[in-house]
Length: 387
Figure 1 (cartoon, rainbow, N blue to C red):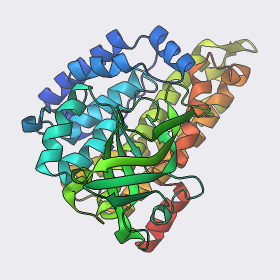
Figure 2 (cartoon, rainbow, N blue to C red):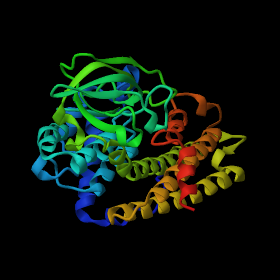
Figure 3 (cartoon, rainbow, N blue to C red):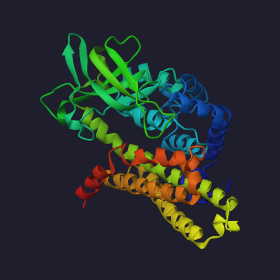
Figure 4 (cartoon, one colour):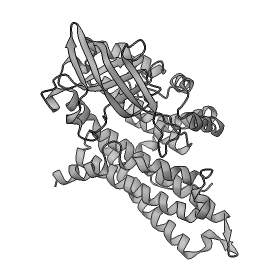
């Protein structure tokens, strides 16, 4: 298959990073063959055993400090795990959620006791994580959540429900976004750490039937007087949850933009391979000038997107990525990804509408990127506020 040549982040020239990328790629090749991925699609989730395999291979908690059982890497190593996953088409495995969104909450905001208790298990895959943020009828208006965590003796009782929770069926460690003070908005929000095993009153709802991302489990979660001890407030202090969430969103949105950039390149690769082999009217689809012009345009804009994402990565590594720039990357690259995949599907003709072809699955999987991590309409609001 043709490979779309695009500018790589500077750090990929580092020998140690290149060696790690090669090892991660080999892990995915050996442990996630297409036959296994097809089973995940049929089941609607990645089997629990794969998380243990990934943990044993060092793919989980790669940027967690060594004193907490991690591998002592940084965001570059996290990106390698995500990038290699996309390049090898490993669907459903929520490594980006686990490594770059949830674990950083504990590393940056957790008490010493919380880090010592949970991080080693999250690194090995003994615990798989999720974050329960979105609620029915609330969406992006996080300050209006109604789930509560009210004091009861030496702990808290969680009541409420969540929906659209990635990893919802698999996770046994969940960060629950709740109001410890229902009379406040942002200042009333706390993040509660919940281990689901033996948690009385915790219930998983149905696995939601989505348009795409067939191998990724997404669920409703219900909390009926679920008890958590007082020491399970992230950071040990009530009312910090909203600010802890906001502090991590720039990185989360960059990760989404990174995934979109890789998705653009993958769509162009499979389409170029298809049009150079499929014949119509006595010539290949590639031989038509329209095909060449469409793909040239998409390659040019895809390259611009990759350059922008690489610049954002460089800023993040230096601690300089601001909220507005991350929002621009998430908004613009995911919008472009949808356009690229749509036009690539068109070049496949009728085959593009058949799920057997990768472009058809990309078409369904891509759509959510403009919604999760904050809808693109919210991204525009954040960008406008910076002007």
